[in-house]
Amino acid sequence: MSQYVDVKTENGIQLITLNRPDKKNALLQEMYAVMADSLIAADDDPNIRVTVITGTADSFTSGNDLGDFLNNPAQNDETPVARFIRCLAEIKKPLIAAVNGLAVGVGTTMLMHCDLVYASTNAKFSLPFVNLALVPEASSSYLMPKMLGHQRASELLLLGEPFDAEKAQRYGVINEITSTEDLLPKAMEAAAKIALKAPEAVRLAKALLKNDQEAVLNQMNVESEVFRDRLHSAEAKEAFMAFMERRAPDFSKFN
Image 1 (cartoon, rainbow, N blue to C red):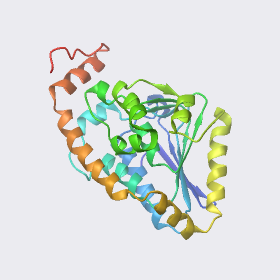
Image 2 (cartoon, helix red, strand yellow):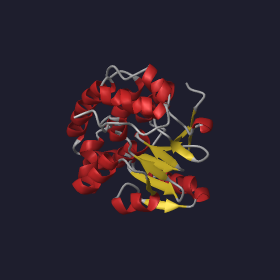
Image 3 (cartoon, one colour):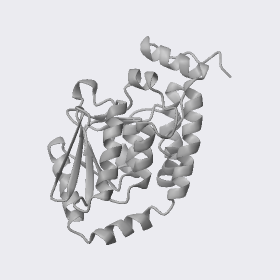
């Protein structure tokens, strides 16, 4: 377990709370491991009907902890981050997200796998992969064009600019916007409704809604290979150095 992820179950609902507020819930490998293990355990536990995931303070998650990420890059499909991302596509029970603030990188791409997504008025989303000379992950390069349309997906993934909850709802990334204080109760209310329904019917309905799992997993594998290559690229080295030095990257020498 991780001191930065709280997991509790009550009335058929598993609640996963990212709890590293001093780092805006930036994700460490140990946090990915707990989330992956919790999702797998929920699928195997007949007493758990649905999972809700949220953050603390003003952040859902600011994405990968850059220091931890660079020191422990994803070398294969068995690393905690790879396991978590694969779990998102493979779990059979519903997953609900309550986005309570900042949602960067995987904090936004994971939402494409959630069955319901609620966000607070102060939620801010960002997909800065290309800005860091990287590529999208979590099959977002497949799911986002399918869900949002090619032009909107290209806007979010190629420009990499932050966007607010209103735009996220307009583009179909989230279901509903609530006040900060109403966010988790809203998500838990939806979870409670699902928890009371016929469990096998719910699982089958989700499977029918997500009938392209093979394509999703295939794209994950393709993205992962390209992503790992990009981590060693000269462009990425410049992007990360610029980030550490708090300056704009200079890509003018690349072609």
